[in-house]
Image (cartoon, rainbow, N blue to C red):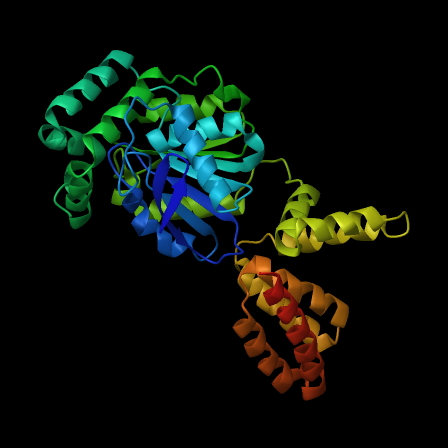
Length: 389
């Protein structure tokens, strides 16, 4: 799909259930959102995966350069705004990883975590990037294909369909978009700032990457306080193409918090974030305002346990958890809570068709009277929701 921003028409791919946590994937220089294709099957079962083509790349429109990393980070935030995304986990390859670092530094509240893949805080040297930009503007990309591919993938991968497709993506990149992004790399140095990154961070690097080698990744991970690092075997600069299964597994394990360091997560804060996302910020604010000494511990308990632990687990996406919760509440005759979660279905991706279907199971396994009451309640609320659209 295409999203119109003030000065840009962005091509973006969206996969996964609407109510799931958002994972924003940023691609590398001279490529497109296609480099993530091999990961989407696994990632989209648990996350709402957003894959834009960067300014001047893929099917996104081209504007004249030079670009800046801060400006490209602004594009990502503007896309999130257009999609009504408050915050997201962010992963990026090469220049995408540099953009992700800039996002975490400029607006840390909107970045939940970072996965930095074959990237750095600075890409030396500025003169070489400016020279490359000039070369591409005058002669295009075709003569660079062999040299670029030798850095992007290992020799064993060079003749595979994935690598051949990657070459085509590179050759079809708009020269101005590529050159302008080179100029963004030339002027960006975040090496003095990344020590201020506080988000949980995973640094991934292909063991055979000549562009941002393991030593660079180790320095990056060593400078970011909350970072840990994993080396991907048999991979070069774009391991999402060579080793997509390994990248997906590392990313999912990291996002699930397994294994974590010795510091336990703040379950209350995480629970409040999930509770607001599912039930709506206004509802949670009203509940918090009504809280007294009598129910303060109870409210803290359910926020930490139900929302911070159970609803935050990665095994089910939010639509699935919504279906399960609605079925249990209907079967138990918990009408007030059932109504609350029917209203919340707008936020979880649980459709009216899902609710009608789950209530058939309630009728069979918990009894027709319970299902009948739930159907009456659901019809009223879904009609209200529809009238508000």
